[in-house]
Image 1 (cartoon, helix red, strand yellow):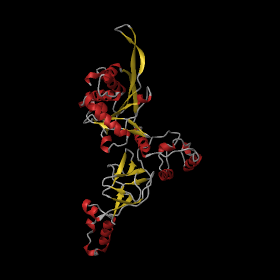
Image 2 (cartoon, helix red, strand yellow):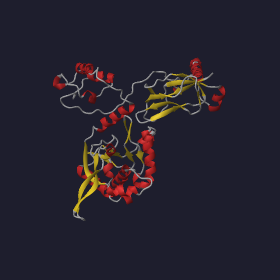
Image 3 (cartoon, rainbow, N blue to C red):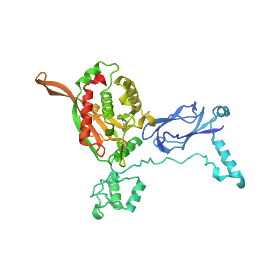
Image 4 (cartoon, helix red, strand yellow):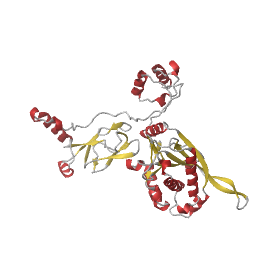
Length: 409
């Protein structure tokens, strides 16, 4: 019977590889058109590899836990001639016939200028996940200079400058030598360790690139009682994160330069106020982006927000769901944390963080007494090249003001 390949698909413009996390078929099983048969994990999401037609599983080549590049052969299906005629899928036999015909074509008839690429399928085994990014600068007493020999050895091992910051150098000026590195690696060889997932590597790379900028954090307390009272009367009830998200978008719309991005000698202002929300998932964080938040009410955003968060936790977000944000909101108060220093994504200038609400006695001039109020720390981390402390403070003040009138959000 004709054979149809199951290939690692192109899962996004910037996705070159994915890790197989679950294989849902076995040899001999019958599969239908567009049936999800293999679950793979990229640096951004978990997605499914589906079949192109109906058939019987002949062989599974992929292995769980291994990483494969786009176009790699993951498995084989045996398919009937009728199914091929109906769906028009390509088969391994047809590809082999084309290569044979091309090889047998007389030399004078070949037009190499318009020759097609070889359409054989990649059968290489797993590839090592690769994440590229700018390194974190190391201290002057560590690996502040890396020799070509050391650089070559690090490239062989997939290491970056930040990875060797813990190595004590014995070379001139405290330079870390290849021998220092090898000794350190031998030293930690027997230590407990775990495999870093694609998600963990992606988060590490993003934070590494973010930290190449001068980042600063400022904060102030915000009273949440009016927000909490307003929320009790809503159906469905918006989360606290959504109130902060909406207020943040309105404040940024009043001062777009605060969310600008420094390119050369220009601060490029945002075209739309699309803001991401940090969602904690297994072994990392994803940031789905809500579009035009300044133009949508709380009511309009509630269902969209809930659906985005739910898909984010299931790792079912598309690449389009994750790109184009100008800033991010993170509610680390859900973990009981009252304060923090969130780090903005490399392509963003700002991230706004909300801590856990705490009951505190607050003086009231109206009743001339202390009354219990719920307060939380509101913090913003910003690229100090674009925004100064005063500007960040005024932005926070405006967000706090808007949160005192939740009915207008």
